[in-house]
Length: 231
Length: 365
Image (cartoon, rainbow over all chains, first blue to last red; front, side):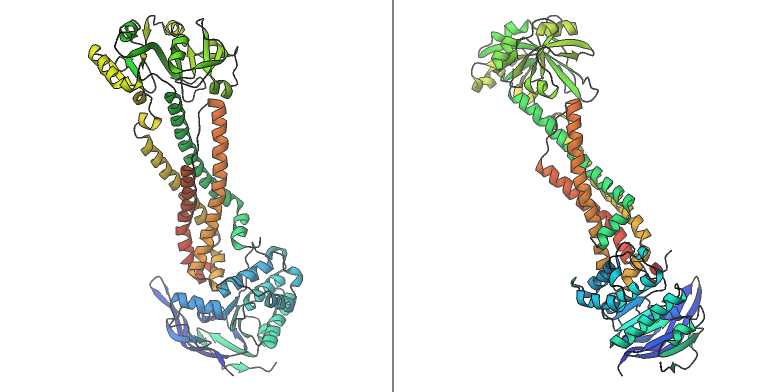
């Protein structure tokens, strides 16, 4: 199976005043195409830092990240942005939709940014909205949607551009159990139907249990050998 | 329209309105001031060109732009008429006062109608020449703009009522004229005038006539009419420079207002900029979004500014009689100022937004 993401000995140290605070202390990780991976661990263990590094939003203090054969760590800021545009989709705990745009507008914005030439793919958009059961919500603004619906729109926005990798930061953290289940099912559906590679940070063991593989982090390190789960 | 730029403008109406008002203010200022300057200047030029007398005979210092003195004895008319080449000499008093409406200034001329009209090829289109000390004639423009007709009463010299007895054309010099005797009576200056208009027998010999007058009347000021009634720009020193400074200030005002408004919206939208960055939007894309928003705001401000300028100019003209003339060159300048001011004003907030740290922006509350 092709390796979509390769992280080698990642270290990240934040400078707070005059004090160096290590957030990651040598993390290595391989993620294969079509994997649905959960990263678990207590608050402050470095999960979010890890996700931001993998998404090119932060640069590691040392180590190397390769996404879909492109070295993220050797790239300039503009190049990292370009890799992110082409290969990564983010889903956040707080949905992070544009409140002024409708659901469809949010998707079209992602398409415009992705395509660089402003082209969009209405068919793909419809497929994604259908899969996420959002066809009748296309013209609604985020504030007119429930939390679960908002997160599904955020998920649709992340996948509509066919990214190689989806990075989800506590996607069910703001949802009740019913909506959490719906959103997690959607993640699973995307993983199975489109062979979509997903890395998800979660505190929720039930959410993690839906993933094919779980890794545990503590104090900036992966503490448990990664376990593959047959779902 | 499901578009981030227009959606942002609609989402923050107060901020957008402040920006639009800032641009509109700058544009309206440029259009109004340049329109007023041009209008007044052209109005003065038109009226001056209709004065056919080639030479003005006066005492030094008798006429300034905003005031005049009545220090010339009308007895000089006879002596002037004896100079070779002089066809006619008509004494005149020009009285300059603040406009009765408290804005701008107004001129009234005291001149004997018949010889003055003959000299300057003017005619009454309605009514008759002023005869009594409380009678005046006005030009067609004054009648039209102020809704005056023969028989109307206007107040001059403060609140003294004068009856309109006639309406003349073409416009030449001050729009209100009374008899010389009436003006002398009003100013308590019997036998005096401000200057004497001189018409030459042959207008091509005006230089020679002026030379003869200078030789005969050494302590007097002999000027060509074309030099006395010059444009407002030439009459008021540094008016051109003032207009340029004003245009520059308008540009700065527009740019500053847009900058402040965009800076505020960018701060409010920090999180959204973080989302854009997470979605892979480049710096150029983010700057482009903010600049397009600023340019759209500026374009709306531009239209509003033009409308405000035209409406304000029309109202000022109706109430105060000031003349506005708008030119394409200044309209274009105002448009460039509005758009460029907005675009430049948004540039700093746009660059700042593009350089935001994505992770910090995403966690912005």
